[in-house]
Image 1 (cartoon, one colour):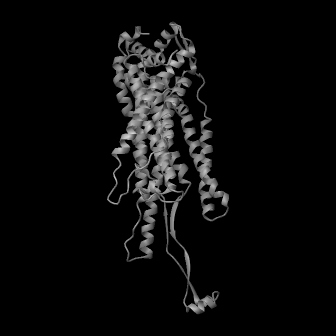
Image 2 (cartoon, rainbow, N blue to C red):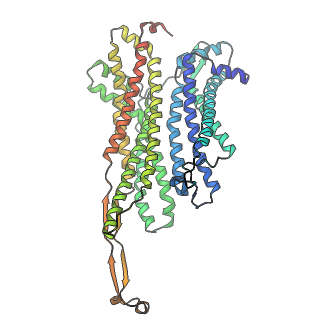
Image 3 (cartoon, rainbow, N blue to C red):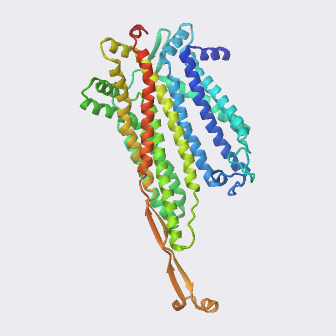
Length: 509
């Protein structure tokens, strides 16, 4: 099969296929922008020597070498919901694509060639999106290059990553998308008579994901004591150990939440079926227990955003408490001077909040695509229920229950875990309490009698201890925003319900 033929077959299809290609390209463009921005930040370290401040930038996050890694990590975290959106876009319009793949097999293509065509469709869409993201990056690089009155730049627009890194970053996204599409097709048997999917797992999800969460929480629980030992210079190896434990604990906790989402859906369905009395709740409960993996993938990405938002809210509370403690300490030590606190860390948290909001928005788009595809793919079942007398309003409420029932406990658990795992790092902020000695004699007497207690007086600075409060307001805001995203997704997805429950859909294949 020639590359031109592969390209033509990959872009062929109906209007729904065009929407899938467009959405996949859009998500790939967002991912390319995030990757290129991360490479741009990393390029600062190659121009500025190690340990030297990049004074050409007005933003301290870019100016200080130790803070650039946090910017890169945040940008890479934004790509998680982007790839989740791309993964959901691949599944949009699956029935029509299955019939087209079967027709390709009927025309003489081998199973491997059919899978290659399906992967090429995703790769081409990803490549178009990556090229659009690269173009947007170059245009933004030129438009945002605006030095202030002192000649400093708000963004690193004075430097580009190496050309090979830009090309590799742009090409990595379509390659990853093609590999992901091929992996997703591993349970699909493409024959000339149709596309058959292998049987799903019939056993309910196991709870072993909870062990992964417990292991991650255990790693983060010892970070706080290790940090205190490192401050006291108990052992040099501790300084290099607790960052590893911190990253490992965060990764294991997030992985456990992702793996445990299906179990939450299954358990929520069983509980709902136990207490449900209305048709809508019974339909939702049976659907959750029959296929708990459906919808749990996008919900898992939303929970990662909620987990990250909860940790961010606690760090904001930490910095606010630290600023309050500094002001009180300055008022006690210098009563006549107005207290001054650097708001740098709080401004940095504002940037992190923007990244979290962007992740929730992108995840909501992925959930919307998944919701619409779920309704359209089950249109025959919904049309059959309507034909037997089930009102469309009952089906709409069942879809709402199916989305909300597992989302509420999962969001609450993500908020609790996100705050709990970082609360062990430090529970209070302390300032002062230092002892200082001052000689009351002459300089000669102090030098000649350094051990004479009658010549020395000890003073102790005032102490300020403030506990770090749990940020209930921020947690309520983040949880409410995540739940509102779920509800808005369901509301928009229900627009597909009326067309999908037409009685003519019973005779469609």
